[in-house]
Every structure is written in C-alpha cells, then in structure tokens.
Length: 550
Picture 1: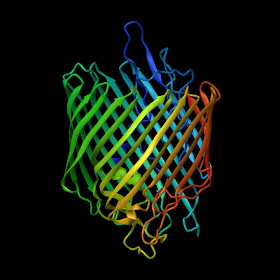
Picture 2: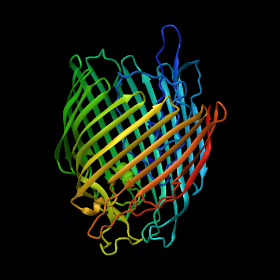
Picture 3: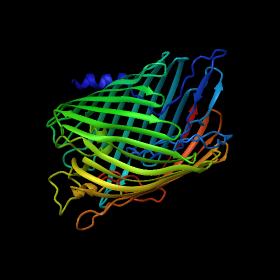
Picture 4: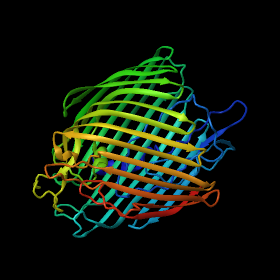
C-alpha cells in the first residue's frame, strides 16, 4: 500500500472519540428538548511519555437501594484526565454550549491540549470533533545514573464521529488519526521513531425491542505504520480489516440466545511478517431476572496463515442477588488478545520486532467474588481467581545481550512470547457522599509463574490505587491520587525492578461560567521508576492551564 496514500487517507478520516458521550434526545410531542451531558474531568496529567491503559474496575450495579440525591455537580473520572464542565443532565434551551478547549503546560516541556466540539445538527443527528496533543521534552536520568537522556515524546490524536438515529437503528460513521513522535535512548542503530495510524469505522445497531432480532454490526479499516525497525531495512506497515457482528433474540421473556462473530484480516509490508486471518466465534445463552443473571457461552477461535490454529475458551458468568443489595458471582472467561501494532505500542513503544509475534490467548480467567452496598454511597467488591495466558507478550533485550551483562545502554529491546499464569485476589471499595467527597481504593495481589522467568520482570504482583475527590466549594474541586505497583523478584540473583510509587495532587477552579483553571503535580515523592522496559520516566513534574467552554 502506498505510504503517501495511507497517510493522506488517515488524515482525512480522523479518529473515533470514545471520550465524549453527549446524547441527543428525540423530539418530544409537546416541545423540543436538548439533553446535554457535560463531562467533568479531574486535572490528572499522567507521565507524558507513558501510554496510560489501566484495567477497568467493575463496581456492582444494584438499583434496589434507597436513592440519595445530591445538589451539586457530579465529578467523573477519565484516564488520562483533564478539566471539563460538571456532569449535569438537565433540560436547556436549544443551542447550548457544546465546545471545550483545554490548554496546559509545565516543566519537562510538558504540554497538554484538548479540543472537543459537538454539533447538534438535528434531534436525530450529531457530529463530534475531537483533538488531543500531549507530550514532553526534557532530560531524564538513565537507570544507571551515568548520564542524562534528552528525551521527547509527543502524541497527537484527532477524531470525527457522526451518529444518526433512525426509528429502530442507530447509524455511526467515524474515523481516527494518530501520530506518535519520540526518540530512543542513545544507541548506534536508531535515533527517532514515528508511529502513524488511521482508521475508518462504519457501524449500526438496533435500538428497540420491537425487532425480532437485535443486532450490532461494524466494519473497520485500520492502518498503522512504524517508521523504522532494527531488523528491517525500512519501516513496517500493518493494514487491518475488522468485521464484527452480534445478533441475539429472545427465546422467551428474560431469556436470550445470540452469537458474536469477529473476523480480522491483517496485511503487512515488512521483512519477516506474514499476512493472516483470525475468525472468532462466541455463541451464548443469557438469562436474567431480579435474582439471577447468567450467561453461558464459549469462544471458538481460528487462525489462518499464522498462529496456533484452532483454540477454545469458556465464556461463563453467573451472578446471584441476595438481601436486596448484595451480589455473589463466579465467572470463567477467555479468548484471543490480538497483538496488532496498536497493542504493541501500548505494551512498549520502544521495543522492536525481530520476528512476528504470536497473538496472546487467555485460556481461562476464573474468579469468584461478592460485591454489594451495605449503606448509601458505600460499595465494595471482594474477589479472587486464576488466569492462564498462552503466548503472553513481554519485552527482553535483543539476542546480542548476555545474561551476565543485560543492561547495556546500546542494546535494543524486542518483543517475545511465553506462557504465564497467576493466582490473584483483591478488593475494591468506594464511597460517595452527596458528590462532596468521592473516595475509591483498589488492591490486588498476584502470584506469577512463567515458562520464561524473565518475562515476569515487569509484571505487577502488588497493585494499590487510591483516588479522592473533594469539593470544599461549589466551584473548587481538589483531587488526590496514589498508585503503587510492585514487581516480583526474578532469577537466582533475585533481580527486581523498582516499584512504581506515584503520588499526585491537583485542583481545578471555575472562575467564570465559561472559564476554569487547573493545576496538577505528578510524582510528588520525586521517585525514579520505569513504566517501560529499561526506560526512565519523569520525576516530580507539574502541568497547569486553563479550560474554556464555547
């Protein structure tokens, strides 16, 4: 595929933005109503050189408890986060303010720009435009403390998303553009890297129970280019055609049967990379009522052209509600985790491909737990389980490194696969008092095993996350967050990568109806740690700026 055509097409498409969820209400019989959801983000700016992708925590959704209404705006969280107007659902006159602009800067050359505008074209049409730029440029201390590294990392994301409401179906047309520019630790073989990505999305889903069969269907064209690679004469490109459908229908009241089918066609340009196709089938049966919520299914996954052929995993979830506000549950799930270029960037943008990696397969993730709400505003979730990953993705030094001297500054990092497993247990607790105080904490312990022990070097075995939002004044929001991630000891010499120990504090204040200011200090403890294999991140750093509604 012609590179110039690819980049030009990606620029025209822009990107699907999942960070803006404002909804348009249908026309009322007596008056026109516009429902505006204005999302507030706490001014949390994570390390600019880190791709932040944290696991979602599922809190219990139980509607039988007494409802306690708040009288102030509701703060919400995002990863990474920013500053936006309060989350309010209210009826307003037509032509409400639907635009937002955030501008921030700080030490280490940190920049943070976010722009979003929602066009309410009609009661059935909306167009959402989105742009985000964040990054840094500054000197970082290398792990051996022998010299400074003049690092830079900038990410640009743009998006366009069009939605039309038909009587029984929603139609969605969207696109994405992404650009990542950064440099490596000084070495003999490479200096700068650039990732360019773009996608086109077309989708439709049913929105009414009047249809005999409900459905969700989408097709996506995704393109991705890695500018250079150590083991390739030039760059590498990946073109992915993803088609997915979910069709289900009622067997009887509160009982459904359905099937999910997803097919991925991956086409490559680059040395040592082969084209291949994956077909993932997920039939399921779902029954639910006030007491039981049961899903019984299976994943049957096929790879053609590259990979391990036919694989299967369970898809079973059982929830039982008792005492009005408590749920006990068991689950056994799994399935394919596609290691395309997008996931490789999330895993480690600084790593290279010396051979085509296998797709990771979650053979099983079995858990048992209990979650509930013993009082208004208080929620908890206690759980434990076991996870088995086949061809789990990890990073290691290129074959030129030796076990006796694996930390040379001039040795590139590569992707590898191995089998891993872990037993885990943990708890989540949250408390919200009338939106004045919002507290949440999650702790997880994992005990890991792996065929290749060095694959565990950067795996988390102890994780703790705490977040607190306080609103002492109606216009002032204060946030405090803390993250700890410990890693296991590896090898006969008990080598251990330092823990992530990150304390952040920030605040935002609404000066005027259309103007707010924010500030955030990250890594308040001034600790040295690594998100990515052998690559340092910023010590104490800050970002401050302003946000506008228009």
